[in-house]
Length: 89
Image 1 (cartoon, rainbow, N blue to C red):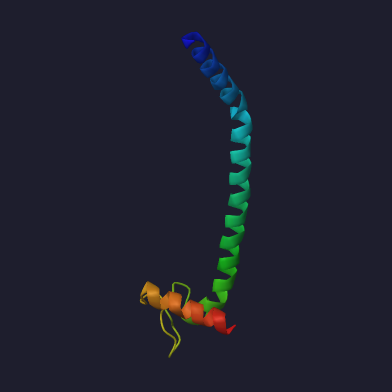
Image 2: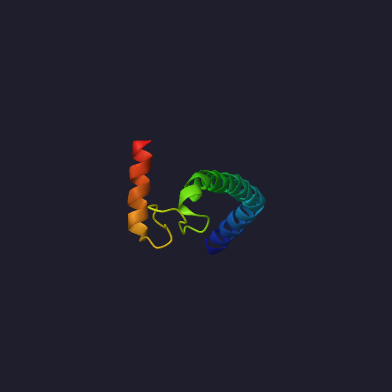
C-alpha cells in the first residue's frame, strides 16, 4: 500500500513538471500583454498632463498669476480636484 502511494506521488510530480513550460509560457504572455497596457497608459497620462503644464508649469510650479502650483498641494486636494474636473468634463 505504501509503495502504491509513493508511486502515485511520483507520477503526480512528473505530471506537474511536464506542464511547467506551458504554465511559464502563459504567465510570460500575460506579463508582456500587461506591460504593453501600462506603457500605453503612461503615455496617455503624459499627453493629458501637457495641457495642465501649460498653466501649472513643467515641474508643477506655476509661473502664471492666479494659477496655483501643484507641487505644494496635498495629495487629497489634488485627487479631489482631479475628480471634480473629470466629472465636469
